[in-house]
Image (cartoon, rainbow, N blue to C red; front, side, top):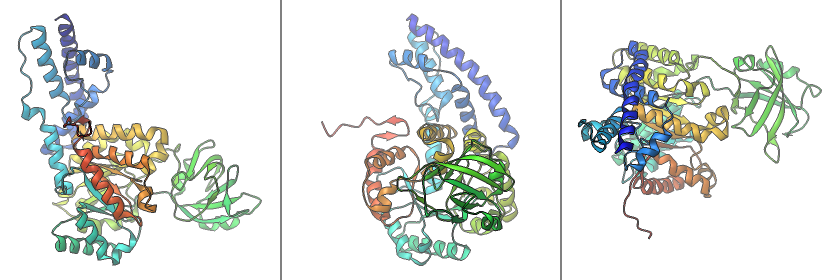
Length: 490
């Protein structure tokens, strides 16, 4: 077949170049002295990155027409898939026989990812493959029943956020988690978030009115004493910004987002220690300020260390009690090196057994994602959390769906687990009411190794629905691969 021969020659050309390009990529990581158990994962990630620099759409269609793999599900096995396709094309074209990968080699990446997921979260409960994680509310420090309820539902992991509460409360939460595990026979893993340099609102002043709308003017200051100097003639409202570097890095025309996008503003002026901005969007009934809400500066390049002084203080407790560390606002390889050096000081010799979850929250983290994964995985078990709250604000809501897909692909190519987080079934958790869009979003989350729910009064109801949903979706999909089970509806 002339079509098969031409396509075989094209695939051979791609394979040859891919081996060169992937070796070049891997050489950039080699100096990190990658743990032998992670080398194959890093090599596959390098091959996948090299392959995705090609536009393969025309090749895919030609392969489909011959009844062969379209290369659309090769994340965990980049070179083995090309090798298998080349062997099939050689046979179709009547060329000398090429030996493709055997079944064990072909699916080795899938097995490696599954093993890492089970090591991180434990065996999943019931029929679902996707693990569940739940964020602990502050009240959980005094409520053993909360954790008993989670364990009885089969939840695999809980999340304690060190941005809130203190070591005394965290210790009581840990004790309650362990108690629930002993009582039910279901051990839940404890994931602890380092707070990181989260930018938040401090004190605020409503100068002209209590609720704020479009065209209102705001002033943001960094020094607490400066807030008292802002008057009604200066702005409609004023607030403190917890991170001076955020204001220093801003420029006129940049965007400012408050409280997960509930209020959007455009910066008009920046001076030392303060900025002036104009509201360009907010809730229809106006926005009423509260302290301790998130501030995002999507257009500012905040190249600040992810490991703060508070994180270093908290790390001793975290390293002693957590089953895994969630690293907030990690953006660079230097961030990971700083954390790993701190862990070496705290737990010399055995810190490498402590898993590190990279929370991807900024465009800079997305750009550096392959390096971040390999630098973390070179030394300790690694995973990725798609932290969709800040990521949506930073990347833009229209790009979030695209970004979460690409993060899933990169993590699968590196054979590391993914946690799908933020606002999963949020309306159901908070109000008890279903949302069609949220149910569809939760169904898409089944492609991750773990789904995280946040706290709320209807959490247990939402967990029940999510467990049923994931159980049904797991029989239809694994990652990007449809499972063609017998249809029961027709």
